[in-house]
Amino acid sequence: MVTLPPPLPAEAVLDHVGPGRDVILPLGNGEPATLVDALEAGADRLTDVRVHQMHAVRDRPYLHGKVPGLRHISYFLSTHTRGGFEEGHVELVPNHFFEVPRLLRETVRNPIVLASVSPPDGDGYVSLGVTCDYVGAMIGRVPFFVEVNARMPRTRGSNRFPLAQAVGWCEADYPLVELPPPDPSPEDEAIARLVAERIPDGATLQAGIGSIPNAILRELRDHRDLGIHTELLSDGFVDLVRAGVATGVRKSSKAGVAVATFAFGSQAVYDFVHDNEGVELHPVNRVNDPRLVGQQAAMTSINATTEVDFLGQCASETIGGRYWSSSGGQVDFARGALYSQGGQGFIVLRSTARHGTISRIRPTLSPGSAVTTGKNTVDKVVTEYGVAELRGRSVRQRTRALIGIAHPRFRDELEAEARRLRYL
Image (cartoon, rainbow, N blue to C red):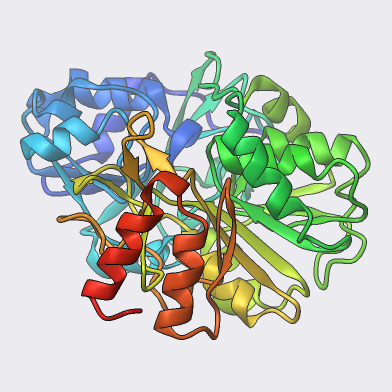
């Protein structure tokens, strides 16, 4: 057996976080709750410490400006950081997910990674568990202080390192945050059928989070030999593997292996990835790099948006002009799918919002909305009323196709606006 350094109390992390130091936390369940608790409790020892993270899944006082000395730098807003952003306590850095490791290398000051990891194996190695994301790209390059959570799954891929390599570690035992799959609406199920019938057997899939992507994965139960190369491994993908649908045998690389950069969902997902040789988590600068994504034949990306204009521009990170999230990996995979031989990119959305009173197909994006996926990248847009194929189409062709998949209640109004804009 390997001899390991003894565990430390969580507050020992304060000895490694001096004034002006940048702390990097993994996204989601990679956040080490006990270590961040210790930072907040010992805030009187901290000065000008910035905490960098995508998608925080736990609410904390420092996110709301209540802990002097700590400031949150977000790369993807969540329920817990949206308010802090609007109040001025949280900064948001625009980014493409695959570029976050590089952005951090170029902008952080004297960084240290705090992460939750799995218990060590017999050789003294721990894994980053259900995350790899941007932190996996920092193994061996940035000092780590880790929390060994007894309930963190041990996963495979480029996310392992010797526990003795960490500058310190503490013990913890608490459950991971779960996100059960949402129930689809009738509109979601209609969209799912339209997308599923256009996905061939043997395609390699990426799907984002939300009720529509999840409904699409459910609709693929009768397909064969699908592959998985996705940033997020969710319940829908796990179900396809267990059903014998997602075998991965036709993948161009990592055949037979489901590749992701993090896993998030119900406890069933966390149980599935534990010591599973058929799943590998790798850093996001490899998983999401459009140039590498495009090397998979028949790569198919599936992502949701909130509104689309006549040019095909998609606002996926704002709602009615209010910032809601960020770009995530949507553009990474939309571009990668276009580089792929036989690849497809689907942007999905319900045709209306606010109980049917607003069309999500719009002449122009609503004021204040940010363009996530640009007009030159969008391939296919899908609502419950059909599929608008935009790739290689003119502005007039796009406008007609998008009006054709809008809710019938709004089509006359949209056509009048299209004529006013001289798109028709």
